[in-house]
Length: 458
Ligand code: ARG
Image 1 (tube, helix red, strand yellow):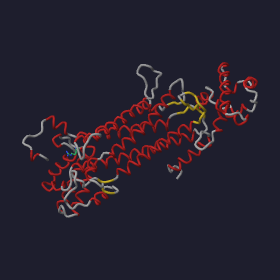
Image 2 (tube, helix red, strand yellow; image 1 turned 90 degrees about the horizontal axis):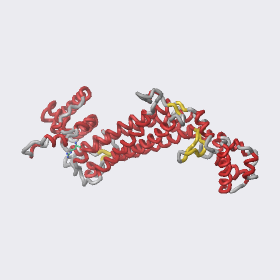
Image 3 (cartoon, protein in one colour; image 1 turned 90 degrees about the vertical axis):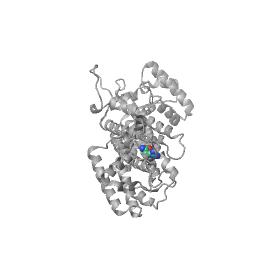
Image 4 (cartoon, protein in one colour; image 1 turned 135 degrees about the vertical axis):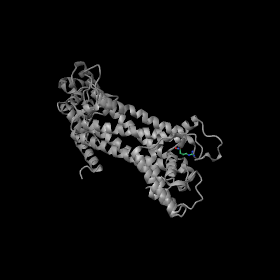
């Protein structure tokens, strides 16, 4: 395709290092769509005759059918998907095929194809995340009343409800989806017609190709358009943050599934056994979701570092933009599907959770709050008095609400029998009814708002 000025062909090493066809063949659908839009525009503008355009269109459809049926052939000499398709087009329609590349360069072509591909990846990830949100909302609704220990520093802090805990992840995924929406909005401009870097002298209509390909408008600066990969980095950042959220949830499920916790039984369908220890059931899917997050974050980092020193406009380094994006998209699709299955089909052992919440003095803050509201003691003093009560309970090996009243009164005489009502885990969660709090009634309104956001009741 560019042999005109060369005396020798490329060495074997050059052919191999140069070839992107092994991975960019994934862009074939976008490449055909871009070419169809381009040829329609060239014909409409009178740059290519209607006859040539019709032949090219027919040839492109035939190639699409061939790729669909037999896959894309991988010939390193043809370097990439653009040249592979163009060379096949020449076989089919003859010299007229050469007119397709008028007023276009592979630089704007690949930028266009890649934007189209990432746009679809965004839409797919978003659809997967909606399913995960639905699963979270369903399970949160079932468990709005079920009490578990809430942790800080992974130490028992205050009782919370399982529904509240699950809805925390709903919120993270909601933000992940809004990051994808942002990325999509910024992405949706068409580089096609920027040509190699400077635009073109042909009387093209960039609005037409933009419209045809579902873009909102053409990009404003041709130098930027062929050298910008922000849209891919935006996508990878959104994916990384989402992967990080999934990893945190996976980590919790792994801890919860361990025998000392026993908070959850993972579905058999998403667990594995051990070849040597018959009793084992391992949460491998969750561990791989946690592991994949590292790889997705690596993909984001890889592309940022590829781009960081590049002068305008296109440099061949940018060919390396695709593997990390393809890899991350595959990992995210699997991670989201696995997590959706784990959330939908895990059995939460609510008795065990409740028991655990009753240990660890999770209602100590409630004693302190009671001293403030009922005995008008400043919070800092109440905190101190409560600390003494916890110390005593610890010495006795008892829960706070198992301490006899006279022992509590020995610590502070302002305590009376009404305090016991405040010390149960049920009273503790019911009291935390501030907006967004853990009280079952608050969790139920969170679930209701979420169901409305997702259109689950329509
Ligand atoms: N395969 C190339 C890539 O993915 C296409 C663009 C080639 N442009 C060029 N000037 N060599 O980046």
